[in-house]
Length: 387
Image 1 (tube, rainbow, N blue to C red):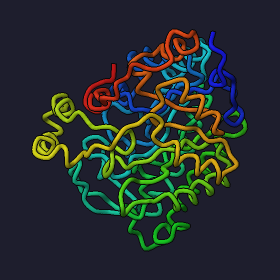
Image 2: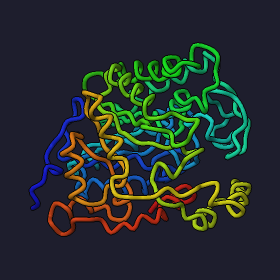
Image 3: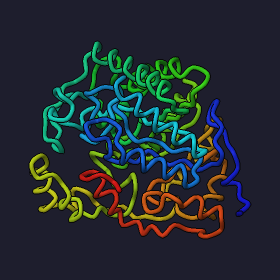
Image 4: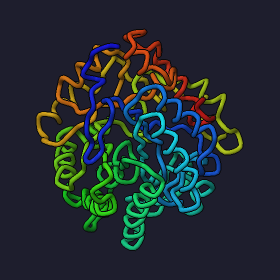
């Protein structure tokens, strides 16, 4: 067995993990009909068996209007028994279970979310394409309440932690970013106003989480384009999240609708994406990708641990636990991350390639993943289940 700090226990709030590796909340597209499936069960059970400290079930919408894909979970009482079966299986393998909760805001279509899409501001979303309605105050209050209700359902389903999605251009991020928040009320304008929705959500989440659930928040260190959030403002957001009592921040970057490759780096396999895309629902996007795929989804250079230098700035500015994510594929780099003051690290693509990767690292069978960073799994997961 390899003796490494990576394989020592750590704490996220009230929850102790057996080691410092967390399967990140990368979308699986396995929640057919917005409900848990055997594929989702088998995949996360395999990841837990493969040695991670905790596995995160990806993107569960807190209400139906927050769904962006048919293969996403929608938190509601009727799916709790199947989620409980999943968390029981994860626990039986010695790992903890987390679920990412969020609302996609304007990144959806009526056919998916069952209503006119809503966002921090109104307008037209070219990626759907669809008109978007600006959230009214009563809408905001309902969505805030839905976050709290989703945390309660997560507890009932046996989850140890929740991860609130406040990055990547989803709804909380849409309120934070001046690119998507053009409001002139108390939720728009200054950064303090733009953080108001986030504070409301976190107050409800922390109340629902109580003293027995861990609360992580995924946030941006930058949006990835000129008119979006930059590092300086994101540092202020992180400090505000620290004040809310969040137990850990997951430091990411990028904006799905504007700078998607900033999130995972490298290039998108456009031909793969087009091939698997549903022609009936996404014919316009297939046509756009055929004409200008490289312009719509420009590549961003990949290197191992590509967010680490920027994440260290957040480590210096904050007192709370931080979780690193972004390009983790080798044990030496994982040790460097933990040695830099991060309580844990997240990975996804290496665990898509091999669910047993962490066991192989610990047993000395490997020191690095064989993942080639082609992003084939990314191109496929948004159009067909990831397996």
